[in-house]
Image (cartoon, rainbow, N blue to C red):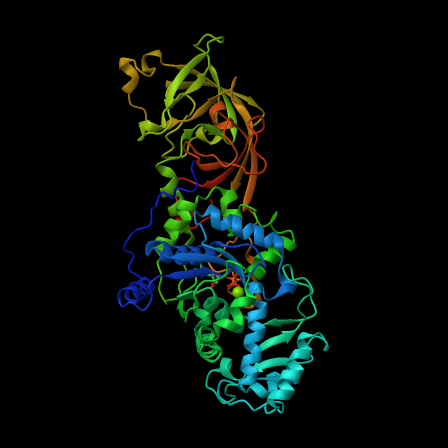
Length: 581
Ligand code: ATP
Ligand code: MG
């Protein structure tokens, strides 16, 4: 399947408030070109919440003939790693997006530094010697104003000297900060002289040991946006209270007026026209039965509660991919959830609906048996070997046909037989009839058992009901799938379920944490059989095993000689009935 072609081509006229603002800005001539960016911090793997942000940023740019950058927000080197950088690039491509440019906040360290010197020169920033604890005490509360730092009125000359010495590495971690000089009485705590630089003697994955000081997010982000010519800086709602600081920095640094200062600091090719970016916030994606914070996902990995970042139960893009989710399904989800300022929880079933919808129309059908029991057709020649022709898809002839081996010895699903049937059971029972998909109607004549365990079901096939014969349309209540015991390939089938048992694992009521809500039955690994056409799949090929669900050949472990399939999703929503599948 071609991953890059999402089945849900972007709808041209999506009507959310952000797209409206962008269209208005283009119509009014405020901007000639739209530029956005997706700015992950490389401190973990991307999750499905990030997919919403990616679809929005790349979507808004793409729909308006604009450009979207991928920018690593790498200003906190202690937690960041190149492993994450590579995975994030891979994820963005996999989702089907091309970034205009790959940038790093660390590309602009010198710009940040010069901008800070300018703020100091203008009396808008000062070096503060308060400890972190003292800063907290001086900050005030939501109801009380803060107090000015005793270092707030240092002279420009002293501030310049101290800041240059911070940069030269003269002071230990935490000894001083550079703070914006705004308003300690502001109703918005983010404006009470926020720190814009701190001392950290840590090496950085891009800049090595060049910098003993690192800028704070709020300060670095807006400058990065401006330098890249970003027009609309889209972020999640928790940054709403930070917008006044974003605007303060943009106004006071005024990169557009001092282009000659920073332009030479950027490497060749980094010469986008500077912009006055506008920050716009939207609500995060939350999905029930899952946790979304990188910190918690990291803990699941580090404590061995899952097999890794790409464990198929993880809500990471790598996990979802390994589980068999398609880029098209994730883009469909983003479209369905839409963009607003309303915080909400999206039901896990909506996500599952998206992958079913995407795969239903294009996943080839195959037969496989999860919990096999032998079925022997006694009235056929034991040496009989037929090759039947099955359509790969019930509705789409363009997906072609395949050969399916048939012989008198088959594997069927153990649960398709009941010795003492419950009411309403329409499959095979002693003395009863069922249709074998594509073959005809068999009757169960005898059950071979070893103690309580059923070893084989001996049946007879009604020859008049073979496909193509006049009796083929004789009605029986049930149809079951099967594989030919002579040709079927033994396969490992990994049956996944939700990782958490409760809709909101983050809810810490009653002293519980998300770990207390892990679903102990979130994975079941079984040995079954699949038809040869399924076994032949390439890693990441998807199919529907009829009646069982959608499966994907595992990216890492599958080989045609030793097939491994992950169940992506069942055919119906079994959780709607209130119990795990
Ligand atoms: P987390 O809180 O899960 O650790 P983060 O916000 O720290 O994630 P970043 O790498 O900073 O992760 O995020 C990059 C971008 O993705 C940001 O613009 C952020 O707003 C956005 N984003 C993160 N989580 C979500 C989400 N659940 N829904 C939508 N956008 C998100
Ligand atoms: Mg973040």
